[in-house]
Amino acid sequence: MTGKTCNVAVIGAGIVGVSTALWLAREGHTVTLIDKAGPGEATSYGNAGLLACSGTMPVPGPGLLGKAPRMALDPREPLYIRWRHLPALVPWLMKYLRHATADAAKTRADAILPLIGDSLADHQALAAGTEAEKYVVSCDYLYGYATLKAFDADRFTWDIRTEQGFEFSVMDRTALRAYDPIYGEAIGCAARIRRHGRISDPGAYVKALAKAAERLGVKLIREEVEAIDRSGGRVTGVRLASETLSVDTAVVAAGAWSKFLAETLGIAVPLHPESGFHIELWEPSQMPRSPLMFAPGKFVITPMDGRIRLAGMVGYGGFDAPPPEAPYRMFMRHLKVALPGLTWRETTRWMGHRPAVSDSLPLIGAVPGVAGAYTGFGHDHVGLTAGPKTGRLLAQMISGGRPNIDVAPFAPDRFTR
Image 1: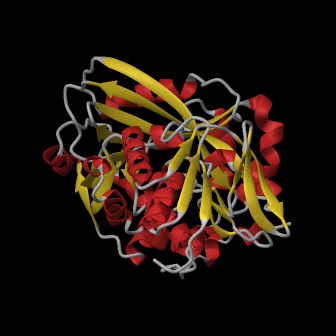
Image 2: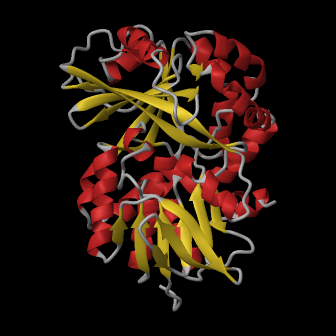
């Protein structure tokens, strides 16, 4: 570690906040981790459990602008919009769709590759020597398509992955059945990428990491943060309902709930909560060999401890909207054809909120004009994947060190007022 030590409040105890707290504690800092619900209780619990090192392509790729209206109106598409929420959504959505071009997608893919490209190794390093190690699993990752023609239609994405060094092989239906007989006729071909990873129980994993951080002296507080106090252009404290903590450094890592605190620090981030969904099939009769992205439904099928999780899709309804039925009906409709012979004991379901920034890149780094303030949020669909590297980068910055990747694309000052 460097010679600089700080008294740090990390706001948010998802994978990014817990990773940040753990790396800071290992660097010798005094750390308080604050979250109203506790570690691993929100999006870091409900994600697909995939370490998607090849997931560099953003959702707004070329062609989305033309397809979006049809997708929003068709209940068979993996997009749900709560129409009464549309007036609040439109200003952000217009900024978001401006990035639905080939050039913007390629720029984002190249920017985020250093953050997620070594995700399995990043998680292994984060979890090393802790009870969380057992949840980190090395595996292949499959992208399943209905037909070879559908795979070819996705050539833009695969060309970028090839340029970025990801090697893959394409299996036809027969080869896929030989690889894993669990899949049905709905998947006509699959692209296989090796050297990925998965987390076998995301919620338990984040909790185990938080316990490891507490053993290193991190203090955990379950409260909501009301404000970050400043004086003379520096962070002086973090205000809770019950008390004000005296700190010299604060990290905003509250995922989709980070917007308000970022705005109080002068960061006008165009962030909108994007709903994600999962269904879990407990005690299944078969278990997939590897996670598979089921392209027709835009969700991932992931083997987990004691269950299979189907997670993904995109929804916009705000924080307070009740879970809609349409995404869960779609899961079950696709399930019947993707895993036709599967039986299970019990089904559970979940909805959470991803932090979607209009340019599909997170905010990682120092807040300009406020000494001691940092951000680590906005990871869109790759929060679990990028969590350990983000935490390590923030620990390096706070310790006075130099990050080992180019963090310029993630600089918070791109949204300063």
